[in-house]
Length: 324
Ligand code: GLV
Ligand code: GLV
Image 1 (tube, rainbow, N blue to C red):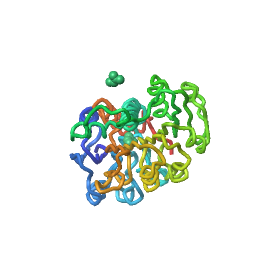
Image 2 (image 1 turned 135 degrees about the vertical axis):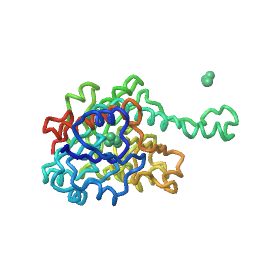
Image 3 (image 1 turned 120 degrees about the vertical axis):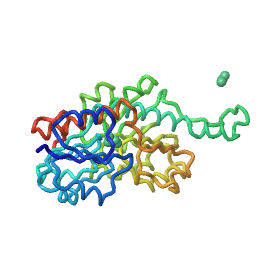
Image 4 (image 1 turned 90 degrees about the horizontal axis):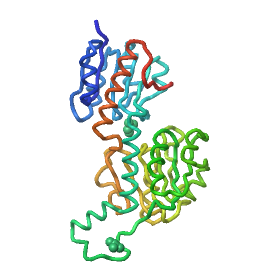
């Protein structure tokens, strides 16, 4: 009999076609735009050989125990892997596929869009135009901050950080600086970026862009201490994971004018409740985790995740496998 696979969400057409036509697996799919309820998921995974999931599913010991010993491949349709308990997967010898590279362009584009939207106050501006605030042309009304001659700090210079910097460069950025667990000269040289301490990053950045992975080391590192060292005119952007930011500290920094504005594509929790204090701030732009949301990219992610899954089940090398 064919390996059994559970798919936790409606898969975009390209990936679904590969799955249907492979003839290699029998699969069951939670064919919905909304997450499968946890109880249902724990039932459905019983005895499966492979799991295709998205970032809303916690893949932890409880789930792996519910699946049982046949499970040998978990493939996530995401570049982020903070929803996966890597130690539990490793312990059980389960291989893990993910989807880097194919989403880099889309995420970099969205990050630039969010940055400009935040620095030039676009959501505020369209709101004013639509609701009668546009009394006349005013000299300092809705003024923001420009990229020209600025220093841009990249927290986490990986594929995505580099792609963001490459796109910002034509805006006449003066200087790129970056932090990471270690210097990345092969990437940094492409944008003449200087490796600095967190302290220097906070002090120098006119735009601080977070694009690192969420790990125990990066959990909550954007906190009061960091914000207090930033300039009053600086802009904070996060398209990585909400967990990297201490949101209470960010709220305080924005509300007291310690920093100028923030643009967030990611929050804790997701969705962020509409009553959350961050939504009450004019200088905070919040997007519903859409950085990779282009048709091309979501289809590419679905194909890659499906191919990773099938390769793993065959015992072959995956196109993109996470080293555990
Ligand atoms: C999106 O956040 C992803 O991890 O792919
Ligand atoms: C702006 O529209 C200008 O003419 O300066």
